[in-house]
Length: 337
Image 1 (cartoon, rainbow, N blue to C red):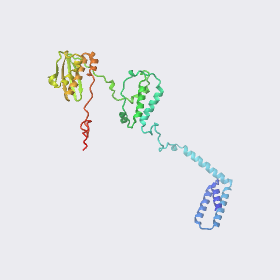
Image 2: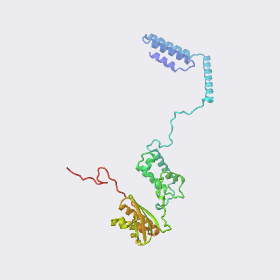
Image 3: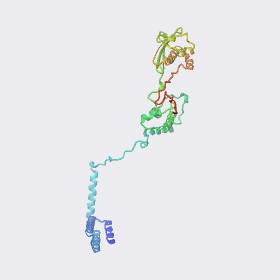
Image 4: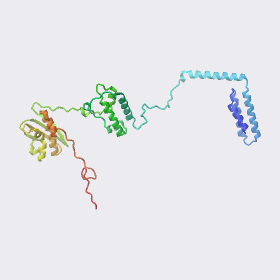
């Protein structure tokens, strides 16, 4: 059996032009082994001897057979080259190739934000040495908040990562405007809000040809419009005098507080229309309206009115009641039994 295995290995390793004859002989040998699996070892020895004889015969073929095989091989190579050179067999790119992502952050959890952050870091390394202007002279810009960024990008950006990103944005924004590159300006534009509240300029209040200045004020759900004109100190609210319009003394004082704070009670007449809300909200809305109209007549009174608290609109509102509580925050009384 060992001799047969050695002879078969030698036949497989042999290289000669008559390899087809070898494979046919080997097929016959294996077929004989399958059919005669129960035969004696003498038949196996004879098959091995026959295989060795055929192998030696194939290796000792004449030079004429070798030349014929070489000519056949050269002919097949020429035919293959002609097929490759034909225009209809041009090479094509495989359609199943895996596409390569454009960004290295493609496989991260937040690729768009990471690309923006890497862009800011690259700009900081390139232009971080440019001169900056003082903090008080930097243009005020409203940047996107964390929630706005999450909704716009559709990614769950971490608060710590966004804080680092905004810090880079503010540092690049502080570069002197005359030296700021266009690449920095384009990168910062993606972090700006669509509406800039700091660029909104209120329309100036003017005095009309009748000497009247119109001021509008709001407080809670109340809206007040006040016309202020030079006079003797008369005040009418919705066609009523001040005492009839507001029953509480505190509301009367609040309504004319801008005139009292600037000592102009007897120098201007006020005619006002108020609507919405309660008496307290209407009185405080009238305070803001009269202050705006008064500044149209005398702009120099603005510092005094600001110190008196008549210029800034009060944004406070009543907090809503919560379920399970008596009011907005009051809890029900705890009863032990």
